[in-house]
Length: 104
Figure 1 (tube, rainbow, N blue to C red):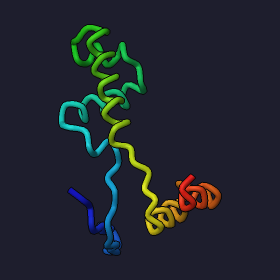
Figure 2 (cartoon, rainbow, N blue to C red):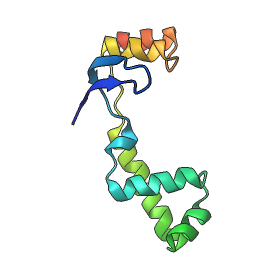
Figure 3 (cartoon, rainbow, N blue to C red):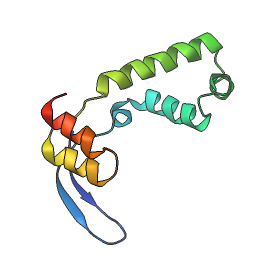
Figure 4 (cartoon, helix red, strand yellow):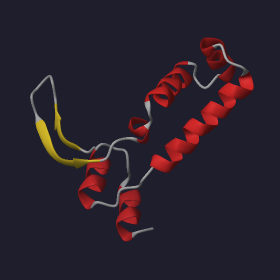
């Protein structure tokens, strides 16, 4: 699935194009819940363990699986329009954008 339109609910502005989803958006339901809990716990695995009622080794393995899947979903877009959008939002510097466009 691809996002092709973004709309501001406050001002009604629309942007159309092809947008990549963030790596977290690619996680399945259970791993997404685990990710949300991990963020809520600020990375404290013992707190995640208490919340889930699971053993520490089980939680650690699930977290490792989650990060492995996040790594598989990460893709650096070299699309010029996408890079320009990232520069405008402050996510990339001009130098970083230049490196991406050059393929470095």
